[in-house]
Image (tube, helix red, strand yellow):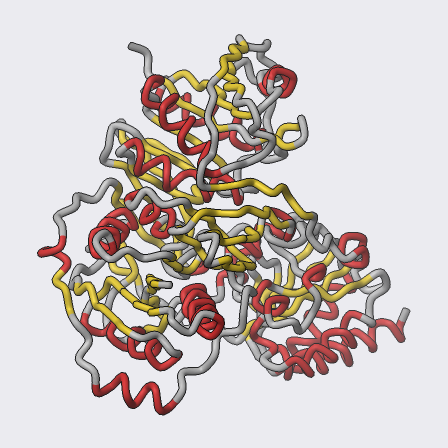
Length: 259
Length: 327
């Protein structure tokens, strides 16, 4: 089995973010802390689990991003991936999923992958487009939001369960090669091992310049970025912990919510 | 030639998807700014009956494509049949709902049609002829307004953002045609029901909901203690918590779990991603407790408490106890 993992770096969502009105996007700078998209971590874990079942498998990982994004490739190698490739793009601002998908599809087109895995959605752009677009560009069947998979390698088939509304599962059998986008909850991503991480740090990760790969025009662009509007009054309570608690209890009591 | 808008309608077991009506509302808004004529497009076997239902109350024409053997959603068949059909129809917009089906279809269709793809749209507007679409990014911490630069745009709308509004128009024409397609690479094995929403949660008047901010599983006990202060209460959670097995998946509030509307919703350590907000925005009164001043949940809350919920919950339990003693 030859498996490709497509991963993305995202800004740490727990920290405050800064918006950049010039690029009309999230400000791209090193003040933000960047890490691997959580859904992509699940995709990496799923691939490592597949390799445990099919030890002959070769796991490749690829990302599109600036120099800084090498960090998440090292993390994937530390988790048990065999080879990494960095598609270098110093593009700042919004990068269309179609462009990312086109670069990755071009990279993958001559490599005969049996399976391509990626996260169901990225935590920053939140569209879930890149995976299905790569599949389409490579004319591969695709299953999104996969919560369970089982491979029958002799039959060249993969059984998948897609998570659909209210947690129901849409079950399908797909002929390989195929692309799956992985939903969280499919597994618990492991921490990178120290020995693998140390070994990865000695490797020189091959870099491909995105511009040399393929020229692609964006098909949509952000016109504006802003902090979200409020849908409720958002009254902020002040004071010490117990003052806040008493005030809240008083508000709830006044609204007859304490019975 | 008159411009058209293709609305891809979902249906299951002979019934229209509940989100279909949100798509109609969106289409009416799009119609105002584009003047383009919306046409409902649906696929399936034995489709005529549900196709007739689709045109009620909105007056749009329906093009129903009967595909023998297509009992439910098969991604390969849908993509192939829609591609050949949409290439003939040449719509300026292809609109879907960002459901599990819409999210699966939209990006693939956009590649097939050479179209821009804008997902999870929450609002549409138009300024000097340019149509723009608003959507949340970064877990709801920001909102971005997008415009397309192509002749065709594939747009998927976020469920829960466009309320059903029947125009009362008479029914349009229903045209049923037939196309054969046999999926070669994907075999559909049907749908297995989910765990279902915990009964306590769907009937609760008060929901205390836990997010990653509670940090440790044992801290859940504190939230159960808080919930016990109210009658008809339940403890809910966000997706990461049910994923890690801290609570069962029937307790999950959000688009992939339960849609709830209790009298009181207390969000404890929840940042407020769009998919969670969509599950609780119908609540009567919302209180959010979070250390992050910028947590998006605060924009959707009546009362905001900026602090660590683990420190705050015992104080709140004490304070509520005082009120209960008085009454």
